[in-house]
Length: 130
Image (cartoon, rainbow, N blue to C red; front, side):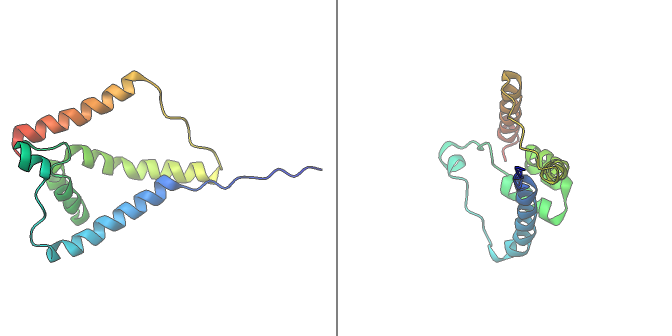
């Protein structure tokens, strides 16, 4: 009789989420050691905020549990942080069933939506002068 070998699936998304939240927690403890964060080079040369301006301050606010302040600094990052527990549970369930990752959607609507969200956040950051 032939034996079927089962492949172990690693929950990479869940492990990455756990590592990310650990880094946020560690960052909140280490932030007072750094009196001034370096200025964004893009903003220094152009005078406009870059697409990720406010992300560091958003991450530090998330690490302290201040969701409202984090949303002020970078709304897209807060949406991602809110979705990560759900996606992590899905990833653990997928790994438990030993199911492969699904293929990424090959739709122009998905790609357009992601780019529209990122460009919208960037436009908002520039308008607010962050």
